Structure formats: C-alpha cells, structure tokens
Length: 169
Length: 169
DNA sequence: AGCGTCTTTCATTTTTTACTGAAACAATAA
DNA sequence: TTATTGTTTCAGTAAAAAATGAAAGACGCT
Image (cartoon, rainbow over all chains, first blue to last red; front, side, top):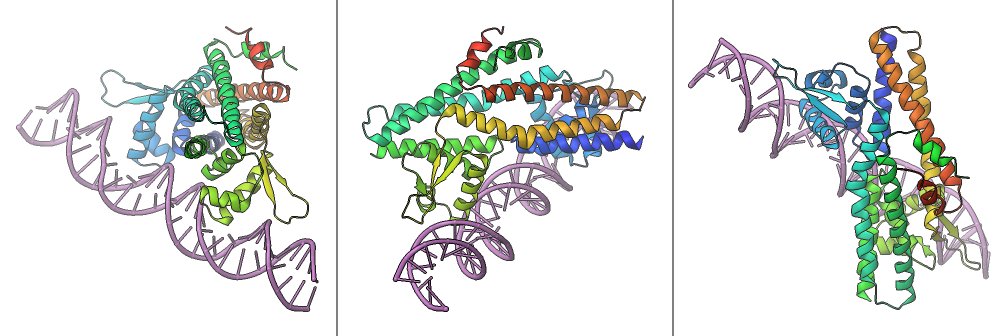
C-alpha cells in the first residue's frame, strides 16, 4: 500500500536528518533506518534502489554500519550475493551506539583533556590556574559520564534504568 | 608563558574537533572552549584575534552560543563594547546542553516517530506489522530516554547521578 | 544633525564533506 | 580458461556547510 511506503520513506528521511544533527552521515543513518524496518535482509542493490544512491556510497556506508556492529551481513547458501540485516532490538542498538561513541570519541577526548591539564602543572599565573581548574573539572566530569554510560550499556534491560532513576529528584 | 598558550590552543582545537563529531559547528565549539578557560569576559574582537576568524563568523556563533544559554553577554558600564563570558560550572553546562538538545532534536524526533507509527495503524500486511512494531519500540525507548534526561538535567548536582547508578549492575 | 564606535546582515567565496561511476579485483561456474 | 556475477576502491565531482568582508544599521555623544 502507498500509505505504508509513504510512512517508511518519511521514517527513513527523518532518521537520516536526525543522524546529521548528531554527527552521523545522513546516508549511513538512512540505510540503518531502512534495515531497521525491513524484515528479509536486503542486498546492496536493494538498498541502492530504495534510497536512490550509488553502489559506492551504499557499499561504503554498509561497511561502516557493519563496523559499528549495528548491521550484520548474511550469506544465504547457494547464493553469492551478500545481504544485510540490522540489529532490531532497540536497547541493544542503544548499547552498541554508546559503546562505540565512547570508544571513538569520549575516551580520546578525555585523554586530550588530561594531557592539556598536565601541560600547565607547574605554572602559577592566575590564567594558568583558571585553565587548570577548568580542564580538571571537565576531565572529571567526563570520566564520571564515561563510567555511568559503561554501566548503563552493560546492564541487560532498558527497564533497569528508569527504575534506578526513581531515586532521582 | 608559551607553555600555557600551547595548552590552551590545543584545548580549543580539540574541543572544536569534538563539537564537529557531535554535530556542532567547529567554530562555535572553539569559541565556547575559549570562553570556558578565560576569566575576564572577551569582546568580539578578542575572539576574532584569538581564533583568527572574521567578524561575521565570530558574531554569528556568539549569538548562537547565547541562544543556547551557554554564553552570557556582559556590558561594562561606561563602555559600549559587548563582552562575553561562558557558564563555567560543568554540571550546569551539561544540563543546558541536555535541555537544548532535547528540545531541538529529541522531542521533534519523537513526534515524527509517533506520526509514522500512526500512519500505518489499520494495515494488516506483515511489512506493516514490522514497521509498526519497530517505530513503536523506538518511540517508547526515546520517550523513556527523554524522561530520564529530564530528571537528570533537573537534579541539582552531578554527584547524585553516580550515586543513583550504584543500583545498577 | 553629523560623527565615531560598535553590531548585524547577507551575497559571495571557500572549505569540507559526501557521492558517483567506472575500473580493478575476487570468486565461482561453465 | 574465460565468462559471469558480485565486491571494492578511489579519482573526480557535486552538494552542503561554514566563513568572509563589506555594506547597512543602531546607538550615543557633541
């Protein structure tokens, strides 16, 4: 039905837009969206067709998604073509994204912060003090956030988090 | 001392790079970084000078930062020039960012998801079922995340969060 | 009103990022 | 081995995003 197609297209487009505003390549997010709402695994050609993108683009972004662990490749026996399916469990998806972004962005950032902090260790000037204090505070905060995210991403169900949050406010 | 300058430059550059990978304009993040580690408020010209950027660029990004609430403008009496200072408390910074991103990106995304979900309500085909189930699950997850973030961003101290998280794992 | 100082806007340019398509490569089948 | 089918790479191109700089606007002072 055309109604379903329209809803799916809307979803894919919006997921893509959302990706953009969180620093994720639009096409990558769109492919992800498409695979999330599709049951039989899709081939590269299916995806090219559906999203009107080139082979190279589809290929690269699929690899990237596989690299993140958000998409698996499936080989049906007797066939040479490669098919792709997404992790559909929303909580698992979330955990994967958290783990990867921690690894790729948060951890390196923390290291840079620490090294900046260390580089002004001896200095006595007021400006150096301010700099040291701020980088220290940021570094501690991010360590804390990193720890919290690790715990959350390790816990098995999304229901535990809301439960734990009862204790807040 | 040149040591301090180097550390500051490194910090600004890295904060900018980090912004990029989270969907925030590099210059905006750099200005923010600069203001975070600087004590007397800076003028537009100071910022242009420090970051080697044009007046228009500095101006636009400063406005954006003020719009987020991460930067305040300060007018010294007897002077016509406008100065800028950043919110320096890391926990407050975090709360502001959470609040704004929720408002600008998460909430709209949830609404789109829901409307996609609703558009396939009557449909019986297996594909429609899959689509409905996935969008439903995502929508519920994001509602939950939104709620959790609201609570966190409302709580007054960052120490409460690690404390609450003791109950996890 | 006219002048100096500072702010704002925006058409153009530059830079960055992403995409295309064709060629090279790999694996299997005939 | 050669054809066939599918994958991978990447130089060149296109699109999107951000930055520039100059002109226009605003404000207070004399």
